[in-house]
Image 1 (spheres, rainbow, N blue to C red):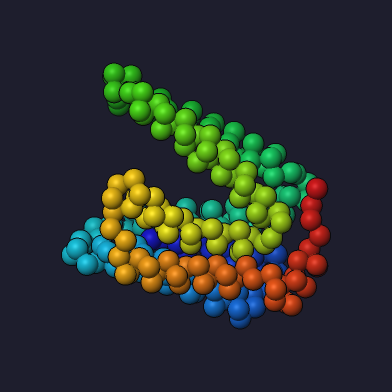
Image 2 (spheres, rainbow, N blue to C red):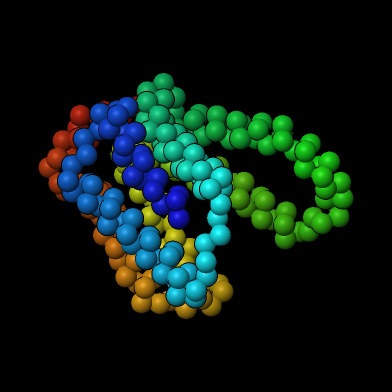
Amino acid sequence: MLYASVPLVAGIFSFLLLREKIYPRKLYGILVGFIGVLLIVLLPVLGKGIAFNGDLLGNLIIFVAVCSFALYTVLSKQFQKEYTPLELTMFFVLTTTLIQLLLAPIDLVQNQNWWSEVSLKSIFGVVYVGILGTGIYYLVYQHAIKNSTPIIASMILYLQPVFAFLWASVLLGEKITSEFMAGAILAFIGVALVTNFGRPEIKKEFAAKPACR
């Protein structure tokens, strides 16, 4: 749930680091979309009486991750003055791969028979996440940052739970509830408020920020 606050944190970083103007319409959109995500994620859980058992350390780690991703989004706009979206995506993939390789020996020592648990399905899942869920996703995300603003690009995180629930309905037979519909509508309204290119102030904002190479 904390990850849904990325657009909020990205807005703060954009204002502080890029001096991006936070118009009232944009602020309302961020807040409305956030409420929509809350409805989608929290109401079904609370309705089933499921308690949240997360500890303080876990929540702090997630909060650091939220701040890191928001900062990555904002700084990408700056780095795009020197690098293309493809180059930034390559840097990201290489960095995360290097970190995982450094940590891999720990897991190999703790689970020495890991190879016996590897199935064709798990291999497909790893390849899918690596290519589509990481490489292509972050490349598209970098292009979104380049052609808009960090705040607008980060609004995609409000749509992820919406489409996740829709796919769960199609593939797993999950029931579409009234709470989900209300949350989805609010999420789309929030995104529309932030990304409404018809507003004069947003047109002015884009005109003041020429595209990088």
